[in-house]
Image (cartoon, rainbow, N blue to C red; front, side):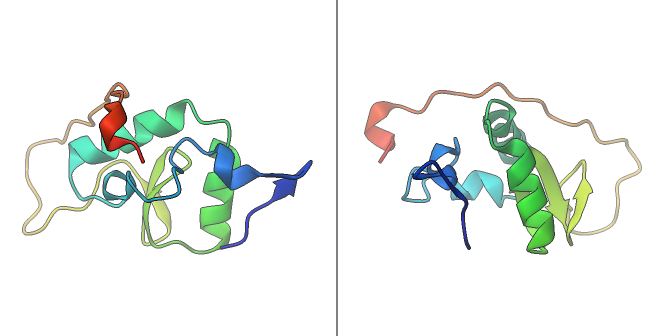
Length: 107
């Protein structure tokens, strides 16, 4: 993946999800509604949301939370897919507040 360098600063390093060790990867590529809501909460405060989403669409990313939206087969959707037969009951989208990670878990 290539990243833009502006004024000698790598823009990807400014992303809120990037710690250089992939600590939060499980949230951004999860099939769990709560994990996806947590990933979106991280994106909500990120200054690179627009460029992240446009870059993911340009690269034809197939799955994951990119720029605050969940992509499934390259298309923005509200919910992660579930296995099995579709439920009759309507799904409710989780909205999570960002939870601060303890310092010992941050690389």
